[in-house]
Image (cartoon, rainbow, N blue to C red):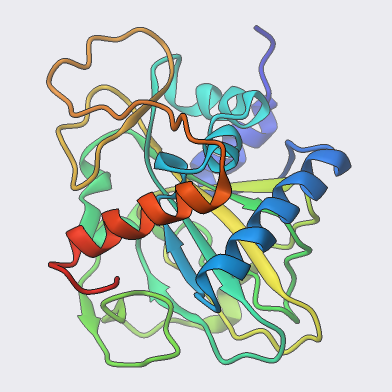
Length: 263
């Protein structure tokens, strides 16, 4: 199989902790995934954070395991690939929702195992609508101390942010067009500002790991390869194609995880 990423792109990822843009979806695919997401929003109302849709929605599973996405991930992680989790951050127009400076590895422990996060743009993602921003090469510092700050507009559940002062002059805007994605290292410091534009911004985030990981908080899904994963809890691909039925199953799952309260 031909490499998806060039040697230059792989070197950029290793040195800076991020690489973009990587074209993965056609315009027709972007339109399809957008329509499915918009239908979901009609069911669940204005939720700005939606976790692990790939376990319940066929379209989300299809996006998380898209061949063009996995081809790029394989260049970084090798042939045996698992989906650790997925996440959508939805920023409506002129909305205060933002993401504080943080590392993905702080609560997840992803720094202890081979992993990489993909950020797939389904709308334009730019400075005006609150694109992801990274501090290049910050992944070389390893795990940093974080503090939790209560802020309802922060899309991170715990409000975590790095305890060190960030020089925002060093920040790099990860500008993407629909159908493009970025890859970022699990310990790179990143965040995003609010959407000040007149249109929505949403992207689909997938965290990938290998069979070297131990069990996480969620069942993982085999995306590629045939490694022995008998030490892991694996999920089957979703079989339900009806959007409403998938939504109800996803909602029940979230309520069960949160001890009987909606997540």
